[in-house]
Length: 245
Length: 245
Image 1 (tube, rainbow over the protein chains, first blue to last red):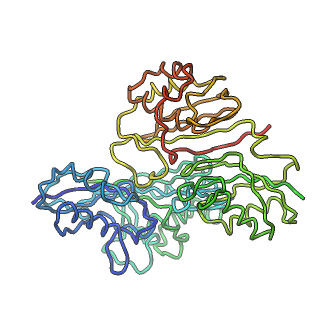
Image 2 (cartoon, chains in turn blue, yellow):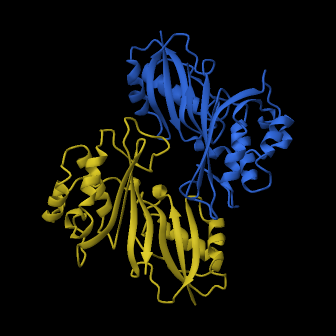
């Protein structure tokens, strides 16, 4: 029995998120089905992050246990030859028998793309949040810096979620504008449900001048979802990397 | 009667190229059909460039003549509301009655994307040419510079094409590498059929060391399609901009 770790890239547009569920095809189902084809085993693939419908990934991490004798690094080639073209395995490797992609994750990095242009984009449809109103990126940058550090991020958690603790540590944030495209990056030890999308939605309202950059502190302090901005759409979000010790 | 100029962005993946033809849906058909819906007129839309199946555009230019009283700049909004999400109008404006998007074009700029990575990419499928073998970008840059100036580009024209002259002037070339992604940009007064794709294919062979950077001069001088590299796939190509005086 070996434990195999996969790094997975996908375009989430045509799937019902990462996690397997009844009556909808999830990315996990497709990966499990591909593994079954090459190993003849029914395996359960554990993902580090349950990305929502429409969310993309450059580096989702997942692991599964197998009796197959396929060399660990060959799984990526074998799986890529049968996976649909909107899902691919960037790498496969053998890890400790007790490695768990979700429980062992020490942190994650996400990216959120905003297309700030008058007209929508054909090439970035399903890939970036289209905001036609002018955005002040300097305001957004200033606001984003208040997120760094350990805070109770209750204001940035989808209502109805339940977790033991709502405190998370944000390591780094970055905002850059390249033509019409604004890229927001954020890394931290963990993220609450919809946290990055609510932060992105709040940053857009700050960029539009509806809220001040300083209001980010007040929103954090309020510990109330109603104080933050709208949840930005899923299709602008990318899981970039998952960190392990 | 007014002449309306459109700047069009599209993802060419699901269309049979720009130009209307029997038994296949082309981007021109879809745009003409959208104009018919909003003006109740049967119009012919003339494009600057007959992009092939799978080729994308950030700035295809097209024009059409209409009796409609819709303000010129409103055409983009009206059309975007009914066009499929993989085609959009970046701008619409009124131009001289004798403006012709193809005959009046003074030059064009294209971009070609190469994904130089071991594994394929889910997010760049249909958007970049995947080359797993290592590429030396410095070699490719050196070779690309030989393209600048006026040359007979017969070696870079799909065999069987017929044109009055095979001399074209290249104004500028650029190559940059960002992570796994190599972007090649080229602008000139015009391009022969498949010219950018054959140049891209030749640059890839030079990057792999199959040909020397200096061989680009010899290939130009040979005026023989057989001397150049393979035609790189359509899905890496983007029509970026069309220049008018």
